[in-house]
Amino acid sequence: MKFYIPNSISSDIRKKLGYVKIRKIKVITHPNSIKDECLENVRSYIANHQGEVQFGWKFSLLGNVILRLIAHAVVKKENNDLICISPNEDLKEINFLPDNSIKNMIEGKYLPGKHLSLIKNKNIKEYALLLDKAEKVKFELLPENFQIELDRINSKASFYLPTVYSESIKITKMDEYCYCGSGILRAFCHQ
Ligand SMILES: [Zn+2]
Image (cartoon, rainbow, N blue to C red):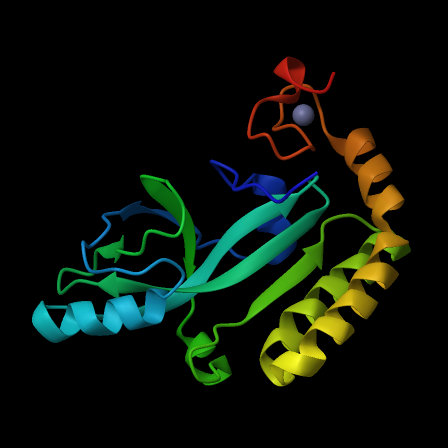
């Protein structure tokens, strides 16, 4: 099982998030853009072109039970069009939720991420919390302490993985993306 980027965000998820403003935006990679450096990319782009920084979230799913929100920076043009210029994934479009409050969560180059359980299940919620923790230690701890702490979190998390797996199998319909993360409909993948 691995995280995958859904083509569309289901109305179920939108409802759960209360996020109605998720929109599709074009990815037009800039030749000077660096992978996973979206904020730096946008800053250097707008230094030479028109536009401003727009912060927001992009999304991926684990087994259709955990939603990962990843902070992301894109270019807002003068005509209000949003364009992603970073080569993070090999996609022509991404689902994006504009949210400039992320500006206050940035530490150095670090953009925050968070994980949400999409079902009512204690173990899945615990797992999502541990994923959040793992995300945080990367930026809070010195490199020599970080690996030890990350291993500790991962071994705790592995306790919940069987539930993540079994709940994902239960919840994923045949006409939905497969829980395994292949990006293929379940009917053509793990039946
Ligand atoms: Zn599959």
